[in-house]
Amino acid sequence: MTSQHTNRIILKTIAFIGIFLILYSGMATVFSNNPDFRIYQSIHGFYEEPAGTLQGVYIGSSNCYAFWNALVAWEKYGLTVFPYSTPSMPFYATEYIIREVRKTQPDAVFIINVNHLDFDDMSASHIHHLTDYMPNSELKTELREHLCDLLGLSRWDRLEFDMPWMRMRQTWWLYLEEGLAPKLDGMKAACYYENYLSRVFDMTHRYRHNDQRAPLSDNQTACLEQLLDFCEAEAVPVTFVSVPRGERSGESLGRINTACDIIRDRGFTLLYLTDEVDAVHLDLRQDFYETKHTNIHGSIKFTDYLSKYLIETYGLRDLRGDATYQSWDEGWARYRAILAPFVLDFELGVDQRDYALAMPRGVKIETRPDGQVNMRWSPVRHAEGYCIYYRAGERGVWQQLTTTETCACEGVAAEPGIPYYYTIVPVREVDGKTFYGNFSVNGHRVLL
Image 1 (tube, rainbow, N blue to C red):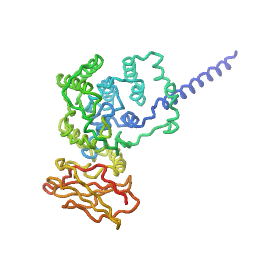
Image 2: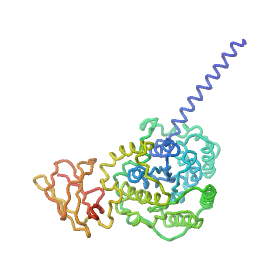
Image 3: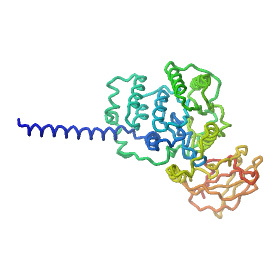
Image 4: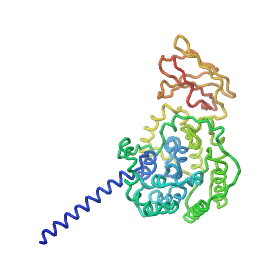
């Protein structure tokens, strides 16, 4: 065999290996992506934020992106606090995520959701949710092995993390439906899925609050203590948060209470909001879309509450007007248009609410033969007047129709065949500033 022939074989072999590696890398990139684009916006979106630009990072399960709305915090207070969260994120990953975040955001404060500590039903899919959109690194591998160890996965079972098409073979049709390459929407992981925007769930009889204590598992206790040791040793600026929810059971809430006791006893800051529904101004009748997640209205209230806390506690400053953060302004402009059919303008203002003004009761809306509408309602204590808002059609934009000092509004024009939604907001003035009370978030539907 001539040396020239040998060289050709070597070159072909090298070319083959190169092509194989390129194809392998491409397949791994595409098929490691679970087709959940909310996760993509949060995890991959975090890595698109320029180094040193985030004031805070909110770590945890879906509570984080349902309760905390990064763009509302930006619009109201100029804060850049990003949610690094996935559905049912394992609490066991928290320390690793802090270490990961500090690579690029070393000065960020951390808000850690406590509620998901009680979630112990971890599966391989939860590991994928968290790690698939993370860039490759030694820390990512360490995290993945740590979670696989806790789950008890064999070496064979772990192959799917290196050969992701093994896992995706049964869900390729989702890629054909959703598209192979998800794209960032630029809205800082702010939610806009349908339930979050439009659904109202009455939590009155599902909300749990008690003083019960229940033991944590050995793994949960060890994980929490190790996390606290790490935060103490590394001087991590951290606040733990427990949010109001409909927990699975009294025992589940008892374990969360026990975890909160440990956090307090170790001297860490804890916002125990589980029994602070009134302080956050959450309306259990209409500020949730299901037992564990607020809708957009509850999210705005929670974001407002936590933003003020972060400003007061950590001195976070208003970054609006700084050209470095133009992408936040651009994200808000797109997001505001999405919110228009669901949110009234004053909900996004600062200190414009008076929650002592109750939602108007006894609302009666009558249609007239001449194509107009009459509205009446019972008076609200301490209200000095009422603002009437409406939207035309299922996705019409909420607009202020009129104001009145009486409990009636007559002769409102409406086009036949189009559903109209009306909501009545009690108001009062203090030092020339209007304060808005409680109202029906979905409004009252009328169809001529």
